[in-house]
Amino acid sequence: MHFRHNGAAAVAAALLAFFATACDPGGDGGGMVHGFVLEVSARSLVEVEVLRVEDEEGAVWELSGRGYRGVSPSHLRQHMLQGMPVVVTYEEEDGELRIREVADYAEGATPAPHE
Image 1 (cartoon, one colour):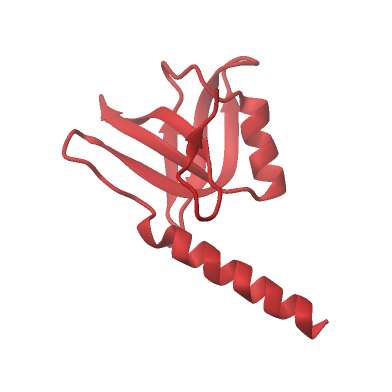
Image 2 (cartoon, rainbow, N blue to C red):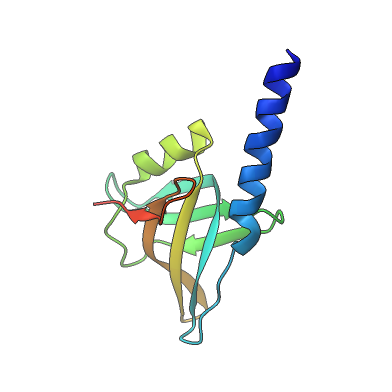
């Protein structure tokens, strides 16, 4: 049992390192947020309406799926249920954060966008 606890601590430390760069606001009104999916609202089977992500500091980001045609709501729900982190690139437009890209997070690798 003690071994499992140490493994969990190692995973937690790795995730903290991953989240050390949770958001990367760019000069173009966009940025990136890393975190765990809290909620997915679907406009249709293939369109995300709203995606809520919690970063390592506990901040909740609400991102609009308006114009985004990428990862399906069902796949994002899978991330939510399995506790798999995502990386979301966004742009700020008309006062809202709009999803540009959603990628899986794999420790030690550059996030790869979904196809």
